[in-house]
Amino acid sequence: MKILIRFDDIAENMNWHFMEKSEQLFDKYKIKPVLGVIPNNQDKELKSYPRRENFWKIVKKWQSKGWEISMHGYNHLYKSETYKNDYFKYGGKSEFFGETLVNQTNKIQKGLEIFKKNNIKVRSFFAPNHTYDSNTFIALKNSGIFEVIDGYGLKPYLKNEIVFIPQLFYKFFFFPFGLQTTQIHLNIMDDKEFDRLQFLIEKNYENIITYDEALSLLSNNLLDKFINKVIYCLLRLKRKISH
Image (cartoon, rainbow, N blue to C red):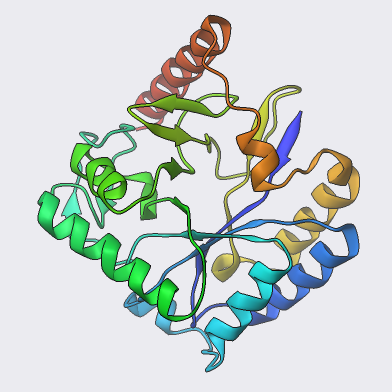
């Protein structure tokens, strides 16, 4: 089993107390997480958290440590309801689903311009609430992004010129094999949740890998395709029953 640590909703406004505690924990165990940064956060709920004026300098510092900076949407504002017609059939509200190709491309390119302005290199993307449509992937490719940290399966896979690094669960739940990507939201973290993160890292730090190491696990052999399909069907069934 290999673990990739992914943090969502990294922005100027967020729970900086637990971000700083997490950074100390990562440095102690030499963990290099993936940080999903919102380039132009307009989410009112997220804006209720403390703001750091020097945010982009901090992001640059994280990247200099070898942490992967990924683009997490553009403004984190949900404009549409997918009714489970989105690419991964997650359902729920979306920032991208249903938007025209022009609008989605503009969002992604404006986000990339913000990263570039702050001298931050970005090669990967994941959308808020896991929701995409076919235009999202065309817009990403047209903007030079060919890696998405979302999807079903136990290994990264290539589809329509995009490498997908699967992310399956909201909670800390791991199979005994394959690649598992966490989904951690600092803004809803409390002491108990941080203790769980600390326990996860202390017990599994030798199995926690970098983003580049995750990419090296890319596989499109028939067995892995079959496993990915089974995972997809099982999770779709579970979500259908739970709703």
